[in-house]
Length: 150
Image 1 (cartoon, rainbow, N blue to C red):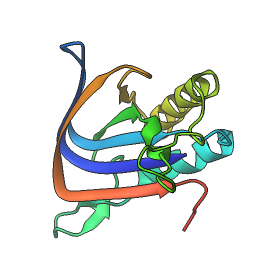
Image 2: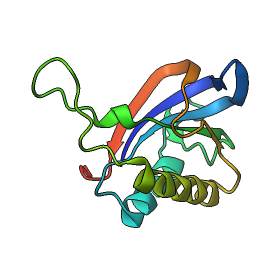
Image 3: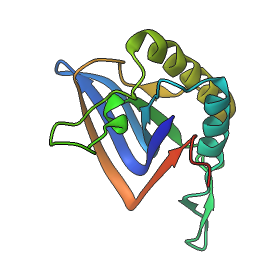
């Protein structure tokens, strides 16, 4: 699994002109699922995500997690995170999980992050044409991949 994590002052998802989800203060997380991902990837990334210390403390140092700040999380599925641009100019998505396996994993990830955060997370809609807006705070943007645990 691959995540693009953005610390935001606000973020929203609109589908067909209707607001689906909106957060103020927290994390907008783009979620890519690979064909070889499983529950172990979900557990590792969820714990890392909710405990990632990228929010400022009283001294202005990034020492607090979204959980400690009581911030919200907005998860948005994005298969294009597994785009391969190795050959030619048209990206290949051969490593992105197909919907029949990605949807259950995405649902499991939503449940696990909600559990680890201690409150519900907001989402986009899997497979929908979404308009995602955000005000990146910092900017702070971090990429995490469960297959490249550094």
